[in-house]
Length: 109
Picture 1 (tube, helix red, strand yellow):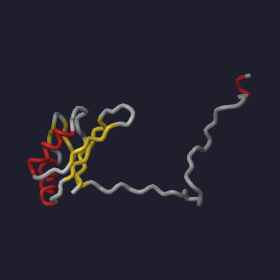
Picture 2: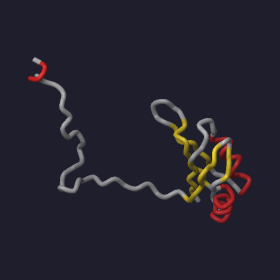
Picture 3: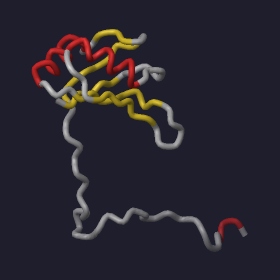
Picture 4: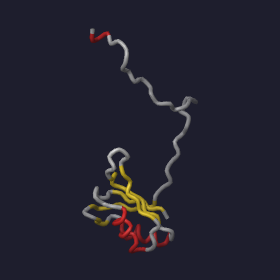
């Protein structure tokens, strides 16, 4: 069972999250999600427990409880949604749009 944990303290480490959940059964992994650029915690993470019954017990016991100074939210993780490759007009989503910039600006001269 993949479990989503949110409202984590910025200082929470994966090891302490794994230790918290291991009270309820075997934990395969515990990961805190971090910002790619800064490496700072984004305040949420995922815990994987192979036994669904133990995972549900952990969710029931830990949801809305205090952990490392924060009231955490714990729930079953939902699968990540796929992003469509086409926009609603039948073309590819290429981004961009009206970016402006570049070239001669009449208002300035």
